[in-house]
Image (cartoon, rainbow, N blue to C red; front, top):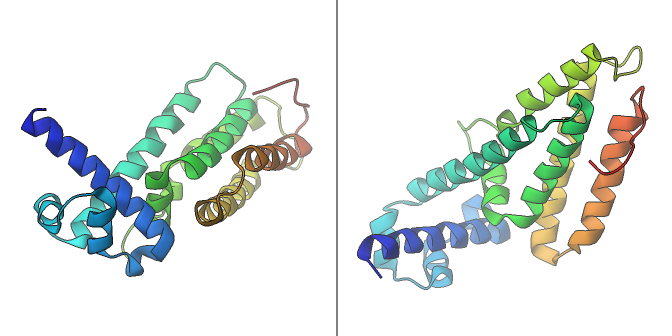
Length: 201
């Protein structure tokens, strides 16, 4: 294996290990030596790639947010009604939070570390635009504003992030989590909508 490829794999392993470490111990309790051990590399290899914990955390946040942004963009381009795309967006975020330790860690870090924009800024403006388009298309009931629905979406996804942390610690059944979140999304979006769901998103 070429040196450059080994370096990429090592870096990826360290970021994955750091994400799991933060998930278990939180940002302040995460230990560099445990990250190195989990990634099966020496402390020297760890400090070669990430000389400080701050550097490691910064790259972890950048990677997690980039993964979120990529998925958000995919959903935003789907050929569906605004409300259906909003439903898909919320569901996609839940899936990411439950399946991707790097995304979970990035979301947690942006909320707990000072001077870092919260991770909601990576998806909330897109959701707000979807709800605005839904209003323009007559998909919201009279008196329901895009701002109020956006705020509700923020609460739901924030709750999903907390549940995802519980999933990480207690290995909650993914199928059960998916079913529950789908029901909550439908209650939010179609409980306040002038239309009803007509099948899977």
